[in-house]
Image (cartoon, rainbow, N blue to C red):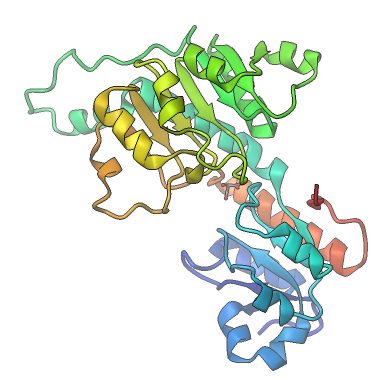
Length: 328
Ligand SMILES: O=C(O)[C@H](O)CO
């Protein structure tokens, strides 16, 4: 398929939830000869040597040793989004292959989503919607009070570009912002958003009305929030997760939500995704769930695609690769 002279790019599929963003197929085909995973698997000898890049959308296709070993011309893995937890960076580097992602493209919409979830959980927007949709029930009363956001303390775990943009938004809501991060931000950056560094995560958890996870998933951050951490939070506090599901011990969270250890949670990410229909989290009224919508805006998706195209074109031409991820 496509123009045989263009660089060959492996994609998971072309349509639907297992494929790349449908609207982008035409644009990508202007630059690349797109080869789907199925086509490649059906004829590795024909397609393998032509593939110079893998285009990862929604975490697919999965990259493993076998795939890397069967793509002798591969130069780059170009992954949509900022998170890299689906990639084994050391393994990929050992094949002499570069990695690029799209951090700037997703930071604003993901920060917006963080605030949307915070507000929805605080002001019980989803419960309110359900109530307003069934106004004849007796529960239509003035009891549906929530937590005030203005003036409340937000504890941000993670102060990368998404965390920082959330702090900017929180400032507009007159929130007090605490943050915990591997590295402290420069003083002028802290001052610009009115954020206070908390070296101790426990301290942040104890002081916050809202705790928001905007940190990458790594072996160090896996289950960062477990039973002990939840027990440090205020009983009125709300946990928001826009990072990755595995940052939180989901069983401990379930228990904390059921027993009133914390007030509520708003989760854009879970494990697995999506949750099975009978999952107990889906039955709790103090949980707001969205299906990993952080970067899901038309504008962000277009920016992600454009960034990935630039990175792939640069790498196949031997030029410096925009948004290259360097091994630390
Ligand atoms: O990593 C990201 O940018 C988002 O989670 C989208 O996958």
